[in-house]
Image (tube, rainbow, N blue to C red; front, top):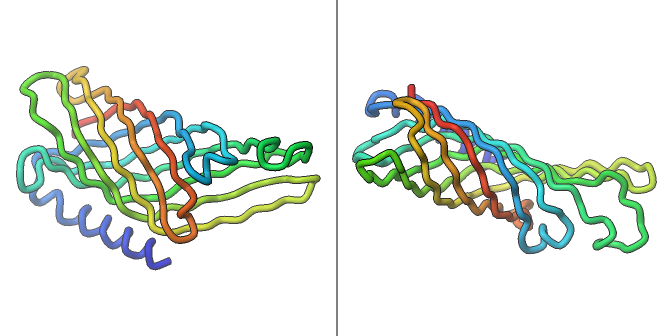
Length: 190
């Protein structure tokens, strides 16, 4: 609960303060594959994730952006790896959450735009299973984080195609939820 309050407070501060000091804003949508690691990788298959958000650009120094991102994904479970011969039914994990993000864009002077980013916020891990017809639904949440690198390609003056790799994870009740993501998306300058 405290993690959600801190994340929402940070998002509100960014949303209220950033428009006063920025050159432009960018809305973006992305999607791709997530590859579970660690304990999460022991029972979850490669899955998918969608993300979207807003970034306020050129805060303070050129290249720095701050924003907010929401994400939602799904990873089905490898039932026969967990307990051979036992039918877990349609079991899956849905990671989702919201994070404040910081982005640094490297100015190349051209239409190829490399960047790095990181995020902090709230992450949830919803576990759903139906072993032998008995519904099991549990949701855990905690502090979440992400780190990544990407490259954008200008399609027009206000539209960019991008590809990125990111590592996402959590702590506390979601400390076992860690994965790599490979995403592609579109960014729209406004």
